[in-house]
Image (cartoon, rainbow, N blue to C red; front, side):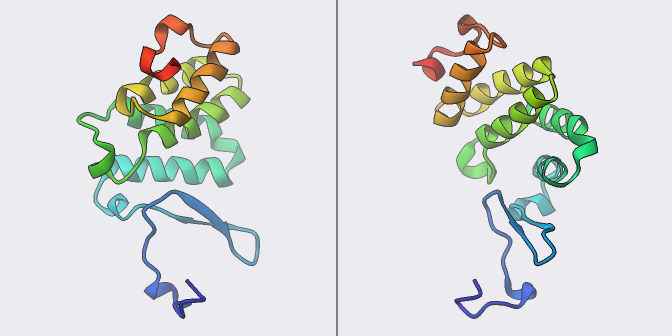
Length: 146
């Protein structure tokens, strides 16, 4: 954006993809979807991501927030939602495993394919979770493990 001559923060649009950059003091700068301004679920997921990126003491709270947001999501359509259920499922599962919270990892993962059944990211994650014994092959939708 700076190369395009748009260095003024007021001119920078909110990016519609999850991404993290760091400023000169190594603090993360998070760009969240525009819909976070009006959509409580997107705001909740974005806040959880920010917590996972910068706050080592509240990791479990962020994981639970992702789990809650995904569990409460109804009528999800990837194209119109402006956010990816697979991305946030993956984002929630990994710290769950690091924290030894297999139940949270399983619940978050199993909700992911319900919302975004064609996700290659979740297909890979399914193989890892099956190998680790966290989920059984019979619990995972067939289209995810194939």
